[in-house]
Image (cartoon, rainbow, N blue to C red; front, side, top):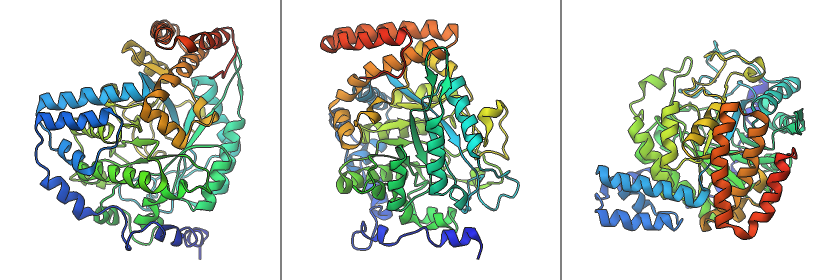
Length: 496
């Protein structure tokens, strides 16, 4: 028996699945979801506004209400829905866009997913796992040259990148401090995108400083899931993956924040949107809180993955934006992530549909940040990026549109996570509170990393934010402005 085979046989803990089943079934009922979609009537304008009013109160929609919104096709009503989605985003998260970068740690994998360039049958993929020194160099590039403060560390499902490797790599990343003219550059929050884990491993992940734990179901449709994830592989176990977030939020793990998502294009987007809502509702019901984030990856070309081009469910740009809008309305409290898989134009537009987080200066090739290569190499990365803009350009583009880029990680170090942050988000208080720290971190980044053009444009939007804080939060303004002056004099990593 190979090392990989022996490792695979120990991964899945059936008792950690069965405890969540109801009468032997999971919470995704394919037939019931389709029945709700197919029987929902086209809602009147008055009915849509009634549903939107619920969303604007930051209340999770019911599946029936979401099914009605899916049926809307009238351009004027769709525009009302989009405007409501943006209003919710501004109410909950203010006009902040949180930025991060993905850091791929290795591309070995024991799975054989039909749509992925990392599948084990892809013999042309150049396999590699970053060493400790390489992780340090990648982090130095991200934190010392670009100015990122948070990353998503991405790990394949393989014994070479198991829990001990993940924990060690996170410690290395957090230890890196890059001297700057004022203070130093460092990564202050590590989110992890990795395979499903057992509760004892999740506890270890929390203890080394996990931010948000991401596991995407890829597709919630049982038959399609089985078709795309061959039997005998770890990923073929639908329920082990489905309940990954439940296990993560068990009290003994200590993990507060989880991120869910779908790879749109594997199956009908209407079903997937409904299933994402069912996932959020089940987490709310069983674990007390829903997902901290929802991500919207869309199927992109990958080396030796022909299904990408064969799928009958590829999502158009128009439908993709509708998907984002529907999730903002259905799960109004959640953070929403659109990555650099998408083009710059789509990402600019997505903000007005409710998106709150984006990556920038992203590179997917293993070791690509420290190599300083601008070329995408299909035999070294999982898929091809659509938006290769650097962080400076992204910050400048959003500042021109009136949005502030936030590098804030304060909430996670002050205990504003889990139910605490969800209650603040639902009340609209967190967005206003985080504006203070967003301004502080934006000033810090502009001083340390921005080009002259970006700094000039960024300072204009920053001054508007400061004026708004003075007007809407007069009691907290004095303390905030004292911190801001300290940042401008060179102090770093200050937060309220």
